[in-house]
Image (cartoon, rainbow, N blue to C red; front, side, top):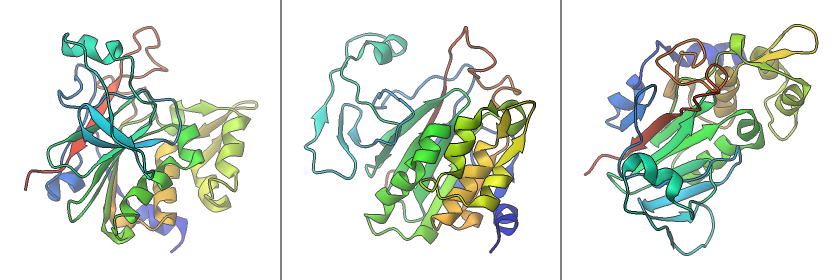
Length: 262
């Protein structure tokens, strides 16, 4: 199947805070925006555009996914929800979270980057990933899918919803991003890379995070019919927060997913 056919099979949805695909499969989730708050029972982490993924055991206990690490406990101060996130000094560094515990929410926060929610049709695991260009080209989505593969989930059973992010038209980048998109490490291929990039003015380029992520996921084995992309530009649509539009506010979009209670 060529790249144009792949993109034609992906579901490109209108702006929304929930995915039709995940809703049809009974998965509780939300793509937060302006005025939305993080869920109460989330485990806070520090994002750094990396590829580390945590297995969340509860809202105060985790271990690093894919390792033999013993569970680590974080301490929460007794304060309001809004203040608690910043006050927790022992938050782990991670740009992705997964959980197999029904009812336990996993979260990521974005402000133009991709929020990616992942699940499987049998409700064994859910994940939330923060994917900017660095994390995307360094393999965070591959790492997230490996969490499912290690548990015996077939690529064809995986569901992915990509939430609101900055559009290609508004995402101007330099040659460093272009080289990362073309790198062997990312493995996107020249045609897929060309569909993700457009020439801008002078030495600038425009990069489509959503197209690149969708093609990358399909190359990793995900069925394009099991991918939904919510086509909303965080910079252009004011119901979402945008770093490039509102740097002085520095507000975040919280996205979350959890397994239903059996």
